[in-house]
Length: 264
Figure 1 (cartoon, helix red, strand yellow):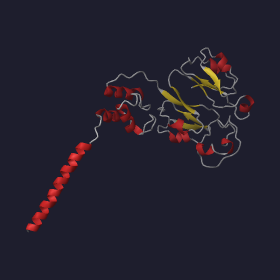
Figure 2: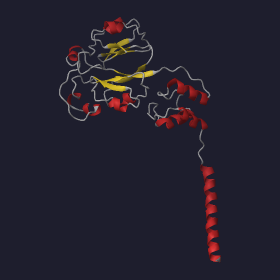
Figure 3: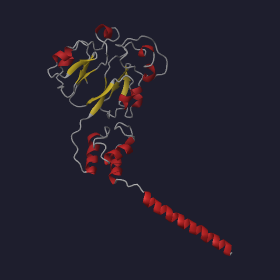
Figure 4: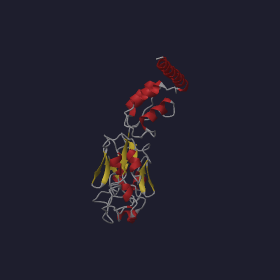
């Protein structure tokens, strides 16, 4: 009986000692956390889309709390979330401009010529590696297999007549589609007041463009020469708009003989 009692006391004593050691170690090795980090994480939408450039909402919250990211870190939450974060951090939030994705191509099935039929994997990334850069004759246009559509968590993109299109009301400007496009056709543009956009990304000019697409920019520079605010330049063959200078007057769209400057 004494042997059993001694064994129980030894086991209990060992458990007590181990518990005390673990308790002291826990306090000694504990990592201090900023309360604001948890509050910021609660304020974020929780999509974990990576549009902020950090590994999910947890990473974004930690970065803001430590001062490594701005209050406007979340493109999905926009101004309302930035305001909440500002209140948590005790800082003023400056004005934020809402952005939306835009596809710089209007080479539809009707306007963009095909160089061959393709029956392989329906992936833009895969098709872009094929000879000639895919089935469409234009090697700079939208391939139309929807890698951007698949990447969007907000159902803001769809395929229309073989070309990706953005629903700017649904778009959260997370940038997932921008990363998904193997040809770099998608860019983030201002949502408000900037109504006109250059809808071609070709690097060819003139006859070479007309041979492959009925709606491609031929680099004639009429938009550039007639823009009263100097907001348009032709770079690498296609027109580009400087949105900081653009006044949305529409002169560029009126002057473009190919309809490459579109109102959206």
